[in-house]
Length: 358
Image (tube, rainbow, N blue to C red):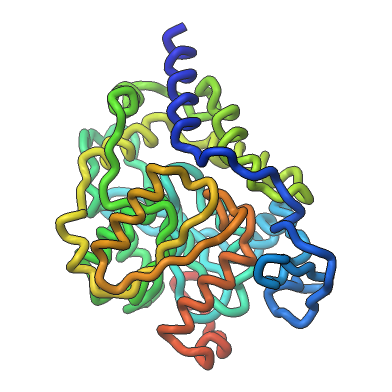
């Protein structure tokens, strides 16, 4: 009974923090049927037609099926392993071109980036990895944020990338900020979405962060977890791939409750706001519909404090644009990366390092 009450309260919190109103799911991005086949991002390999978004004439690509893309990416990008700090890091490297490190959020695995990496594969080398989990029997009450930032640098060392760009949503954005502060010479630029330098948790959320460290099992066992995701995420998913949202549910559900609780506790203890003006690298902050007042306020704090920052708006994308609208996010990422490396570099693919493919 207590567990059900906790789940109901969590549901209420998520409802309060979701955007008011919201928009119903549209055909991709609400496009018309006028074709634009000349756009390289709009038409996937093997042909297809594109529609055009009425708001800005943005190409709306032919549908991608998540399950097929994940299967092909797993076949083309073998899983690599890295031992670092007493933990095991698993990842995949996919595509050719300048490196872009895709950092996981609070929950989920690297598979959630499969669609985005697929779209970028001919222009960007995407490096994806799961945040490592403490080995069985290891007793560490408080995992520092710099451990996650150190994992990022260790993965870059494995790939031989002296400098690289990062994309970090939510918790991944917090790690990206920490890495930019600790190792500014390594990170060329960062794209952050739903990011924050400090996150205040409610009394109930703090209670969950403490009690969750003792609970076994995964999020799939948490009452109302699926209902929360359906209310706050489902409206933004395109209707042409019904299995894509189920893919999110399955992937998120594999996150251990204890792991989520430890990361939530780390968020509660972290406040990078006093150091934000030390970040000198270019930062792009992405706002989307459905991000909610809490997320918008946190990103506005970043906008006011980081010296070299710009913002972009992705309409009708929700809080998971890399999964709901990967083509549109990819176009934004490529544009931002071209500012650093130039179109000629993005147009001349590089082979991934041997460390990344072994």
